[in-house]
Length: 367
Ligand SMILES: [Zn+2]
Ligand SMILES: [Zn+2]
Image (cartoon, rainbow, N blue to C red; front, side, top):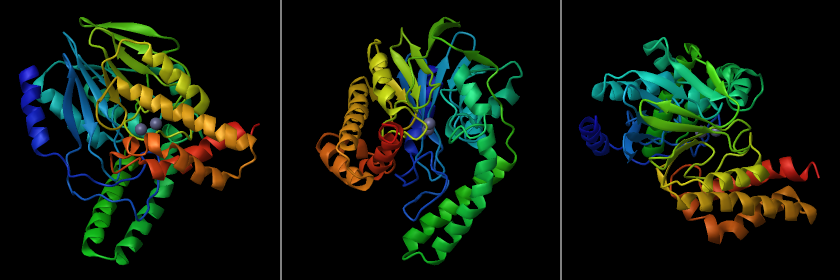
């Protein structure tokens, strides 16, 4: 398999999508800043992160995909997260099949957000005995109305919102100031329309096995530890840790850009990442962005902790929310701005105000 993957990896690298602008993965609608420069860009790029362990690093697109992790065992393949839509999952499944005929036996979903599980059905169709594993709380959130930006009922929400998003893109195309912007918006429109068609036909494949505490899978010669470390990005985050390979796949609980907090627990999140740091980890497959070294955890936790402390202090001082957004953005910038702005998405200045507001709502309003 290694040879095949290497060849494919080279191929994938040769066709890396140009950097493209896009939305925060969890925002539904669009804005004039939402760009995609490359039509038909690759969906993902495979990167080896350990012996038999690969990250499918999603190309940055207007309609976002999460990363996936691929773990080859002696008798099968385990995939962590399934992208945001069946077409993306199908593309990855074809890559896997091209290099091994071993079946994909298990999908593990890290959390309930739409961009991490909506491709599950592809693997379920390919293997009727597929196990789809998630935390108990993830499954409950997946099936509950109004969980946040994910879950089965959220498909209907997206379908209700997409026509408005598409109409706005069409209007924006009409008033595009230059040819380049127009081309990008037209590409975004194409992505939005095909995403809507996919959602109209989606057959949600939900987890059929849940875990409520940390446990190990002994999977074809490998140990894959499913870890519940506490609340953070959601209340059901699952970390997939491979102790021998010293690799962890984190889903959206650790990303290589700014965190999305709106369905999260800002104060506990830093502590949970602290728990993760106690493990012997060399490589992180984050939910979005490039595979990262261990040092990323301290940086990501540092931002969460500093943000929470700053919001609580400003709240105790009676500072209004708008002033807080500006002040905290400026105050934390020397430490985090350049590090957290390495992608055209999820950048520091765009996200701090949203994070401040989320932390304010959860921590100060209740005070
Ligand atoms: Zn998420
Ligand atoms: Zn995500």
